[in-house]
Amino acid sequence: MMRLDRLLATLALGSRAQVKDLIRQGRVQVNEATATNPALNVADTDRVAVDGQHLDTRTRRHLMMNKPIGVLTAARDRRQPTVMDLLSPLYISCGCMPVGRLDKDTEGLLLFTTDGQAAHRLLAPQNEVPKVYWARVSGCLTAQTVQRFAEGIALSDFTALPASLTILEAGPDESVAEVLVHEGKFHQVRRMFGACGHEVLALKRLRFGPLTLDEALSPGQCRELSDAEWQSLLGEVAFRA
Ligand code: URA
Image (cartoon, rainbow, N blue to C red; front, side, top):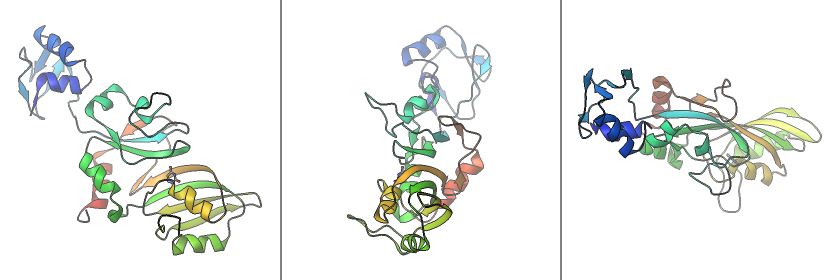
């Protein structure tokens, strides 16, 4: 249950004062009857309309974004664009937040949810949710690097868990690979390659748990997850949190 004025404000129909006016003007209907009391409690199953147009009243939302390069994963930044600037007001006012972070120069799959607890579980190190990255790196990747990734790489402050490196192209100057990791520490993939003498020139996240980046999304675009996608993601962390 939620107060009608709060629901309308959460659905980004205006400030609390503006939606109260809408209600008092008799422009809001609940289950086909005009509702003039802003404090009316509405349930998930109630049908709410404004000027006869039915609203999608879901306040729990889950999204995937194809994060573009050059955008911070942060709530707000006074100087630089953030992923929040790319969300429509509806998702902001529903309280969607990014699930973890990608570096400013990393692109690809970034999830958002209004479910803070689920986000917490998806990020909990003990749940080891797998993530797959595509990387273009300097130098020639060899079987030796594959071996080092598989053994787990000692970094200055922690040892990265064993990861699987698949070489897609190995040239004398640059190589391309996919990396499967089970953790998400700061700059992890860049640091793992760095420890093996390869600079990461481009990095894109392709997978998070069971979800694959929707290639129909151009950089900066996002779409809602289907129920099946969200459930598959929750399945990834069920009974393990
Ligand atoms: N590893 C990195 O180094 N950067 C990212 O953005 C994600 C994983």
